[in-house]
Image (cartoon, rainbow, N blue to C red; front, side):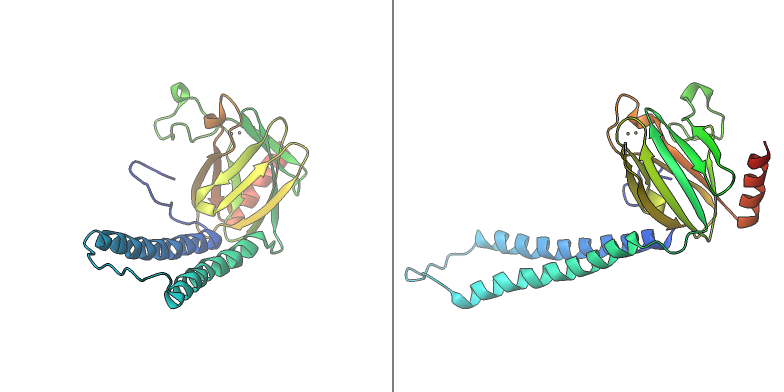
Length: 229
Ligand code: CUA
């Protein structure tokens, strides 16, 4: 979860988010090198007093500064494509969670378990417990097992919403009439929160998502309690 003055990415809680952070740092490093080089060149131009009245073309330098950027772009494009296809891979999920976006709350269905389903509303600030997280906590949290492949199916009932959890590297649009799929793997226990990230109306900011990542036996206990009730 993001707290005060946390401007960078959150700590990853899944292998794919870890890869996304590595790619971000890689791309940023290339960006910094280009910015420093171009910045230095532009700065030094102010102090350049050489003039060549007969200079009309320079084939060699133009070859270099055309091909070199193309090669640099390859160093960003190829790792980017690798990640893109890695994110799209579905690896035999053990649990499937359906999440449906509404104005303005999420509802969830565990169809593998006799269709456990519930709505998940943000807890308003005036009803918050002392240990609650303002604008990020919900009345009914998603409980999911850690160290398992989890598939999520996302859709929406009214307008476009987006099911987004930064720590897991998940961001899927919920679109009315369509079913989107992605998957993730949580490699540690904890609370992972996210927010809707498609501008979906007046209370867009107030439909957060909270996942409780728990050991598998705890999850089985939780789901069997909810099936019986
Ligand atoms: Cu739902 Cu923004």
